[in-house]
Image 1 (cartoon, rainbow, N blue to C red):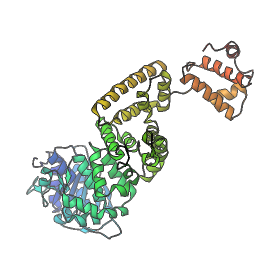
Image 2: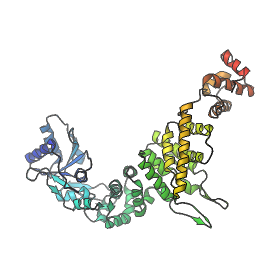
Image 3: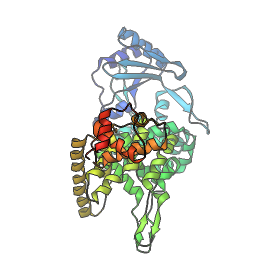
Image 4: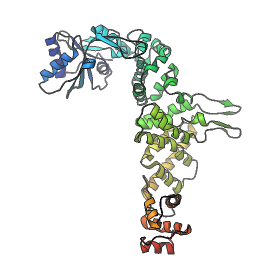
Length: 488
């Protein structure tokens, strides 16, 4: 671990000159300094001054002569200055905070640098670098944050019970930083999370979800979820997931622990580069197993229909977490509903018909679905797992072949409901739906290609069987095709 060094950026000297002009000591504080020490990229910079943060930002802006426009947030006593060389820089005056028991919003007043550092969440975020001409670039480390970085430890600057009681979101942030950085949470700090977990109830769902998503997006998200589980936070924020935990054994029958299986699938998806929403699909793919668990004395534990029930739960779960209810939610819902389908094909003879149906239902999400299903193969029996993966490769190859031949990704039958109604002079009805479904089934089964002429001929045959005659507007060639058969 190297001593963090300020980059040789002109903006830092500009801030130093402006601070000297105002006689306001200034420091770069927090995540930017932490990331410098860790050798990680960091864009946004927080500057704390012992004095008026807005005045310092405006003084810097004047020196830049129009190369950066200062945005003032007067209610918060902060100002933002965008720069090309160092990203966004936020200026704020050093402050101290006091909290009321029913709120995580503090009462704020001007304070010293020491008081400002003391209010930080963790020691690794309480590091500073001087922007003062007398000691420019010198490290400020009141709480041994650099040593905690070396020891890969998350610790609060003050008594953790006070830190977490004052702002309970910091408990989620502790887990998030541990997951992102692969750090340990110091034992006293972790114990304080367990003691203060109920305080999380005063935090808005939106803020909790922001931290949860960052845990999900971490390199090995299972680590964060295990910390949430053992600290007691997970039952508060995601009780349905906690129900996956445990193994029930009745006589010779037992099942795997679906909680740890889910975390393994999540890690597998993360390792394969899955984005946030594919990771949510991994989290939720077995979420309804506890609700569908049954013991069959002949075959053991079953979870029939858990994929359908889980898919029905997805909109409610997304709403509870204040997640988007549009395209992202629908994709997750689709993957949860379909996640058993490719694995079922591994156990059967892979027919073109079954592959067509899978391609039709998955559409553009077929690649995401296959990644999720490959991640779902987690048997502890190494030989069995390898056998499943080899067979899964056969399914993937078959998918490529059928897709190349039939172009069924985002498949839409050429015969629409409107065409059916125009052909037979029908109004919207159950009969129209039956005819449309018959054409689609014929295409998926390979009876006819998804092309206009053979599909229309097939439609006329189906209509004839139902006693329907085409109205005169139908081209004569199509009627002739129906009279003489489609040849399919």
